[in-house]
Image (tube, rainbow, N blue to C red):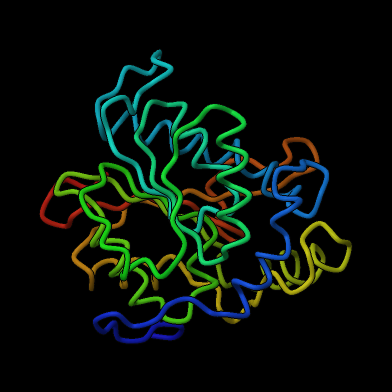
Length: 253
């Protein structure tokens, strides 16, 4: 399989150059008009998918504002907390991890200013000893790691027996090369150097990696863009997709 290597115990997954790139963006992470503007547009779409997955998997009341009350959530590759904070507001006890120290500092400051108690950690996921989370999320991260198989194995190791894993990532297609890497970075919608097309992973490759780690992947949903709808969930997986996964010996999410 392309873009995948065999996971080994404590195989490093952090790329120093990637952590440095995103660390330089930390100061603007919460500015909806700054270098992370696209993430601010993407976040509501991801949260819509995530809320539906939470309601389905945990049989939560769709009317509840706190469907994760009493549950533990982990956000891996959290940046400055754009997803971790909504998870906390949904009632979860949240732990969040990032490879860039600058991002963790910005995340802590923003959470404290908002009165949110989030346990932010910096470092290699597999070395942090995190386990037993009801919900684990990792959005737009796997395309940046050094070893995808090791990263997936580390993610799976953090999920509770009946927990839910949710990932999103760009697909490796001709369309994503043209639009996500070419056009988006050329016109400044995404900071230059953010994406490396050869590191994108297809849904089939991700499914195989999850299966190797003992998890079954649900049906992916595309994240598409159109002039009328902007970013939205769709059946078109050609640019970006988001998907659930859970332990393979149970019913798929």
